Length: 111
Length: 113
Image (cartoon, rainbow over all chains, first blue to last red; front, side, top):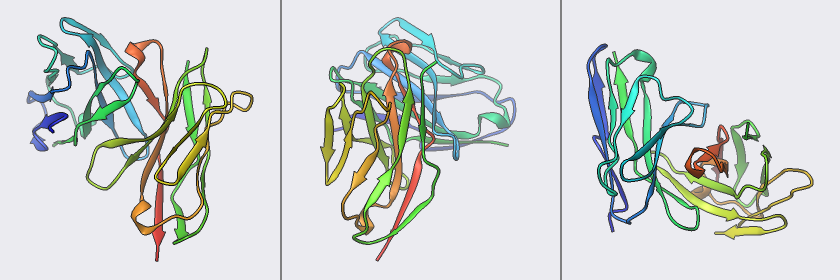
C-alpha cells in the first residue's frame, strides 16, 4: 500500500551543495509532478513528466533538474543549493481520473 | 493564464458551525475542479472533485458545486468537527503542463470544541 514514496523527509544543505530528492510510485501512473510549497503561497509546479523519458518545465524550474528513466521513479536534482530553495517539496502522480496522489513531502533547509 | 483564487484564512469556527470557503477560478475551456485537504505534517489528499458544469462533488460531509456562470467552486460543510482542522486547497486541472493541477494559496481552518 505504498503509493508515492519520497526520501529524504528532512535535509539541511549548505549553500552551493547539491542533492537529489527521490520519488517513487507503485501505481503504474504515467504522469508525475514535482511541486514546492512555501508558507501562504500554495503549491508551485517545478517539473512534470508524462511518461518515461519525457519531462518538461513547470512554473518554477530554475535551479532544478529532473529525469524519468522508468515509470516508477522521478528524482528531482538541486544543483548549487540557494536559500531561496528552502521549502517543502511534494512529488505526486496522477491516475486516469485526474486525481493526484501525493507523497508525504521532503522538507529542505538551505543555510 | 489559468489561476485559482481562494479566500484568505485563517478561518476559526466552533464545533458544529457552518463552513464556507470561497474559491473562484480563471481558465480557458472547461477544467476539472478539485478540493484537496492537508492535515498537519502530511501530504495533500483529494477531498472532492467535479469534472463539468453543475456537477456537485461531495465527501465526508463536504460539498462543492461547479458553477460555470460564476466561475466558482465554493466548499461547504453543514457542521464542522475538530478533526476537520486542516489546510484546504482549491485546484483546477491545466490542460497544458501535462494536466498538472494549479492550486490556490490554501485556507487554514481551525475548529475548536
